[in-house]
Image (cartoon, rainbow, N blue to C red; front, side):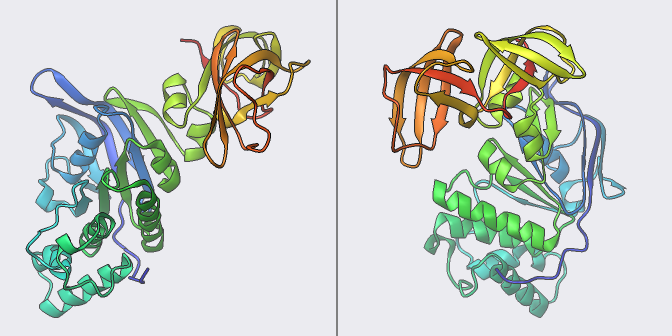
Length: 360
């Protein structure tokens, strides 16, 4: 990766009670307020139709807010068209001009921003070096792989040194290995350049890998926001728990709460967990597959269960386990001594890991 001067223009983004309604009835974004600090990468994460792309397009000025205010830095941009906002967007489809060389593609926006010819060329070459495509100046997009085309699209946006850089599902057209590589490239560039980036994805692993903060959206609103670790380890409800990494949602009973420590019973097993302001009575615990503990036989601190399916997937085993309260999905690193389908086992949970959630 090359070196380009840090982007001194990186700005904050603020939404104040923003709503977007299409026609008279379809509310795509419902009264959301968000604050994105300068120089941070914030991901809007959620299922299709939750409002994340509409939110991104409102930052860009490609959609106008129906109500509320949008600020970039200290400037109210709510009614400004896209052309008057200092933002650049990288699309899922790359949107490169097929008849132009790589260098011409990267130079395209600069030519219309009033830069002299030499400066335009120098900046474009620097942008290509930054995304690891030095020497590709004269190629056409059709001569590049998908990953290389996406990097050209990133370079084209970067060289404009926008206040905010926007990514709309940038990796969804790439295969898994390339995705990991390009997402790391984007994160490295963002951190090295101090860029403000708003990144839209429905892929939770991608969001966990690149973000300073994640805003999980659901039904046109915000379900939860926080650091990747906050959301993974302390989801507010079963939607977030299940969306940010798989979670087993197991019914439990909160027997008592003392000083915000709850004594919880699950299938005859008793465990103490952070109460998270929940009262006594029925609740759920969310347990990640990697935090399920399986032993050769049921004992004092385990629940009697049976392996219904065992699958070897290379570096770990995946198990479906039948217990009295339903099915549990578990992952184990021990591939040398796997449990077998039909085997009776003991089921327990790691000391840290299970999280209490409100009941359904």
